[in-house]
Amino acid sequence: AQTVTQSQPEMSVQEAETVTLSCTYDTSENNYYLFWYKQPPSRQMILVIRQEAYKQQNATENRFSVNFQKAAKSFSLKISDSQLGDTAMYFCAFMKLGGSEKLVFGKGTKLTVNP
Amino acid sequence: NAGVTQTPKFRVLKTGQSMTLLCAQDMNHEYMYWYRQDPGMGLRLIHYSVGEGTTAKGEVPDGYNVSRLKKQNFLLGLESAAPSQTSVYFCASSFTAGTGGLGYTFGSGTRLTVV
Picture 1 (cartoon, chains in turn purple, orange):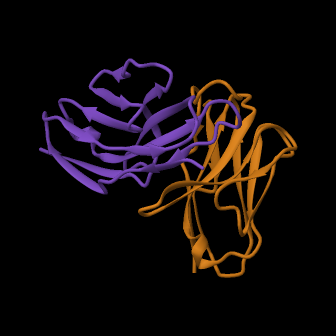
Picture 2: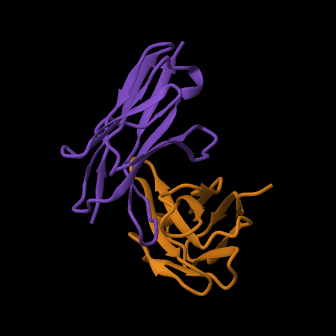
């Protein structure tokens, strides 16, 4: 079974600064996907970024980028130029390639961006 | 509006009562899922379905039943509600295997309180 660990229950950052959220995972699979989801107070689950494990290049989406270290089973999220609207819960998630596309989530990191 | 719709959005139940949560999607997705979210626990998979007429257990299935009689609907039932089932419930849907999470769509959640 796969497990996802987010070791930072809460973090804070000043507006316009950079913050990194950590995620590690455990799996015996070789082909999989990793995700970061954002959950603002509205409760909606929003996909931030997705990484395919077979791709060595780290995924980026505007101010969001990841540091994917497959051998270390690490998948951190970097948010640059933090904005007040980035305040949210962030969940790291794992999906095995093929099968039923079930997501395995970490426990989440609550990020607060301070003005 | 295209997407995943959950009904109801809020509900308070007394211990021992039963209820059904409805999830409807209009994207012709094959796969559907029910997750629960508890503070400090992330999202955990309750049950899922890979097509009309099919259901399977997830990580935390006890106390819940599901049905997928129509492709667009996935029902989650609580036969005898317990306070431990107080949670926020999310439905999600996905096209099919091999999409790697692309198009994975969440509903806006149902907050259930069992007193």
